[in-house]
Each structure stands twice: as structure tokens, then as C-alpha cells.
Length: 221
Image (cartoon, rainbow, N blue to C red):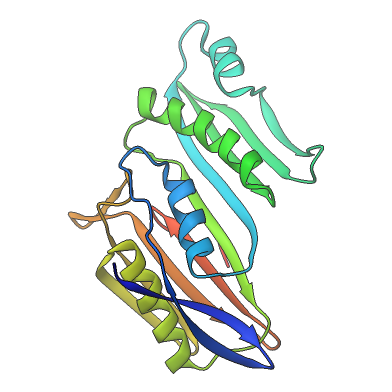
């Protein structure tokens, strides 16, 4: 059983804490759930979840009603606050012979995030398999980190996912690693290379934001 390093903020320092434990990597585990448990394993203070995707489907008779039934959509752009404080944004527009659909949920509750993720991903699997739903777990550390510590955290999280790197981006103190792992089900291709995991660390003035995403970090940060 491999030692895992958990990162916690204490007394103004980021301290590594060694813990003996195992991580479930069942193939049936949804990608959102796998990223959630990764953050839990490393004691990252999760602030919320972003679930999002977009599709283009042919305009045929009955499609508008079908999309309403499958995805609870209506034409136009809508942004609503749900009962638990989650923000749901949907866009459904007809463009010539296609319906253009954009979906985004910003949630603090994993159950709410999972409910929408499962529904949207089920639709994607059936009708738009090349457009997997993007999921991002947003965590936050209460202090800015220097580049060395950011690199260490990214490497630990990548190891926790068995993520094989294919791209590393460093810009000022912004650091992002993308790659592929068998622990996540869905993927996209960039220049012929499969990608399904992305870890980003963004230090700010009083904090450091972490974005753990699959298959990529879709939203702007």
C-alpha cells in the first residue's frame, strides 16, 4: 500500500501529512466522483464543482420537445439559482439546421453536481459521444504558494490519478499539467493525443486556487 501525501494549511505553512490508505479506482466510478475522492484523499478544501458541456444536434421534427424531456431545456438563454444555491445556466438556440446547446452548473454540493453530471453525461454517451461533459473540482488553500510548492502539489495529485503527462504550461506562477489516465472514463483528443485529466494551480494575492478537471479545464479562470 503506497503512502499518500495530504496537504493541509496550518500556522501559515503548507505541511505534508503522511497517511496510509487506499483509493478506490473502480472503472464504474464516474469521473466527477473520482476527482472528488482525489481531493478528499489529499484533504484539499473543496469550494465547489463546475459541470458543463455543449452539443450540436440536428433540427428534426420533435427535437425541441425531445431536448426538453431529456435535458429539461427550453429555447433561449436561462440562468437560475437552484434551491441549494447552485447556479444553472442553459442556452438552447436554433442555428439553421441545428440546435446549439450549452450547459453549466456551478454547485457547492457534490450530490447536486453528480445529479446533473449523470443526466448530461448519459445524454452525451447516447447522442454526442465525442463531446464528454466537463467536470471541475475547485479547491482553495488560504495562502499564495511559490512555484516549487505548486509543482510538488501538481505532481502528488497527478501520481494519485496515475496521470501520464502530455502537456505542461507554466506562465508566471500559473501552472497546469494535462495528461491521460485509465482511472477516468471519458477523454478528448488534441493533435491525436488522448487527454482526460487536467490539474491547474493558480496562486493569488491571499490564496491559491486549484482546479482538478476532466477531460480538460473548460471554463476560464
